Amino acid sequence: MKRLRNAALICCLPLILGHCATQDEVRDLSYQLRAVNRKVEDVKSNTVQQVQRQQASSLSKVDELQERIMQLEARFEETAHLNSQLKERTKETEAGLAAKIDEINAANEERFKALEERLDSLETGLEKIKQARLRASEKKAREAARRAEEARRRAAALKSRGSSRSMVSVAPNRTKKSVRSAAKKSTTAAGGKASSDNKVAAASPAKENTKGANDGDTFAQAMTKFKAGKFKEAYSMLERVLSGNPKGDRAAETLFFMGECLYNQKEYDLAILDYQKVISNHPKNKRAPEALLKQGMSFEKLTDHETAKIIYKKLSREYPQSPQAATAKERLGNL
Image 1 (cartoon, one colour):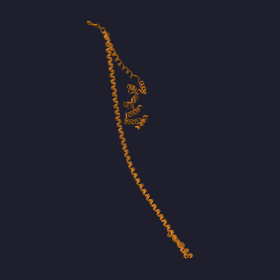
Image 2 (cartoon, rainbow, N blue to C red):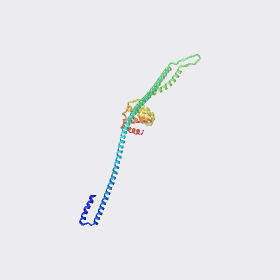
Image 3 (cartoon, rainbow, N blue to C red):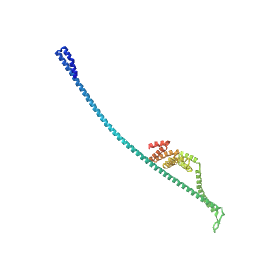
Image 4 (cartoon, helix red, strand yellow):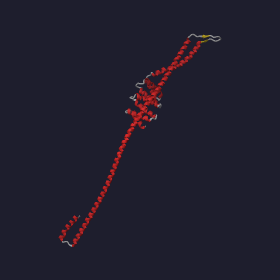
């Protein structure tokens, strides 16, 4: 500002000196000079105030920005701390889940082993019952044959006696009595009993002939009975097929449909045993995954859902490509 004022004086000085300025001109010039100085001062004041205001505004904005930066830093630190806690919790949760899964797998393995033992014991018990029934039937048949043979011998003895010479006994004041007629009556009574016993004895050869029939024809007849809903008759015929050839090519098929007969009669516990024979004795047969699926469904019918889950998981694990595995996964999801 001083430089500006001095420059104005220097510019006005030649005019004063050159033109011999009057007193009025000097006053006018002084007035103008004061006006210029006032303007300069006003400009200076306004500029300084504006600059100060701008500086104050800038400082305020800087302070606000610093405060926001501090808030952001605090939030960032808080977020980092929360992330660290979350990672720790996630690690703990993963470790807990892994331990829980291992525990569940171990428990399932134990339950599956117990289930297999239970199935084996049930199968053993059922086999004992069948053997006991078979022995009882054989005993009855032998007893019937023995009685028939005794009756035949008695009838033959009576017949031989009847063919001998008639014996007449004479007593005082009594009528003659022929021994032949008494022997004939005895022979008739014994013959009736022998005929009855012979009917029992004749039943055994009929059974032997049925056992000796063609397995294929018997199996076909059993399947016809099965499709007709005559499950008891079908089961008996399938049982005969299996007893005739327990290790044949049709054994797995026969056992499976024996289980199906029991399943359709709602005898789910017995059906489980026949399905287990397919699984244990014929694991590579195409009926094995079907037997596993129906075994799981049988446990569902018995409301033992936990065991059914184990069976379905085993089916998915051991026969993953079978159509029954997809069904097992679907049923497992619904439990």
